[in-house]
Length: 115
Image 1 (tube, helix red, strand yellow):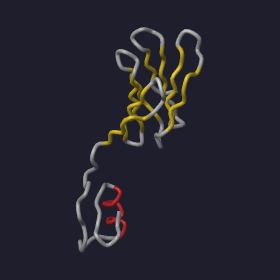
Image 2 (cartoon, one colour; image 1 turned 135 degrees about the horizontal axis):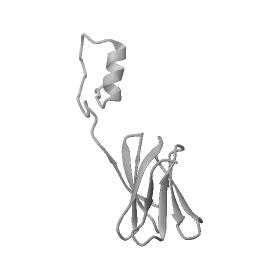
Image 3 (cartoon, one colour; image 1 turned 30 degrees about the horizontal axis):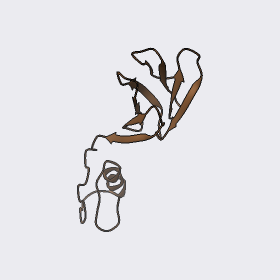
Image 4 (cartoon, helix red, strand yellow; image 1 turned 135 degrees about the vertical axis):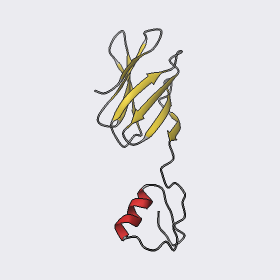
């Protein structure tokens, strides 16, 4: 298990896991209420809002997801821009294919079909 968070009223417990899920538990009974799927990496941090209505989960996939605890629905995914986000490298010369692929992985694009 990774991160753990208890709601301010003590009713809900949230946990993160290496399998890329966040889980909501009924704190008093230990009953699993929901398994929240969507991350592609381990969930290393969770936090419940003061009223227990929202859960934030952060993952090694570089995203933070906001979940409604009542429905288990992901209402928003946040992700920081990568170093070369939306940089157009069409026609860029003097770099290797490996360097070009690394730039795509960091957010670059080209008009000829690259990332």
